[in-house]
Length: 174
Image (cartoon, rainbow, N blue to C red):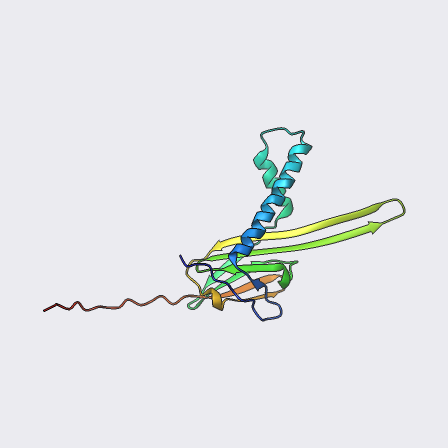
């Protein structure tokens, strides 16, 4: 398997950033810690009743992370990947690609505050997604192009040309 390649940001104004896989792993670690804290809150709310660990974890994940549908089309020269990410801007999305691995992540935080005479209301909302896709063929990550339009992220990933078989003549030493 090919090693990770550092990618340069795409220069289009509405293109999400291409980043190294290690940065997405760091974000994933932070997210896992956030889910763990929320799952522990559920555990405590239930009076520290043991035996619902997995249920608490999945409940915390469902509150904190969004499902992102992905479609991959295979053409002669490229893989075209489309991911539905409504509500996210290009600067909220990070993409990492190596030979056969695609990682997508995004995070948006919003805060709303309402003040009345006696009540102060402040709510913070975070939308996040992480998606890893194993690609069906090797791609040239350095030539990847991305765009975001109407909540649909589109990536064009050029395929790596497979070397053709070569016939080698065996010579007899005299």
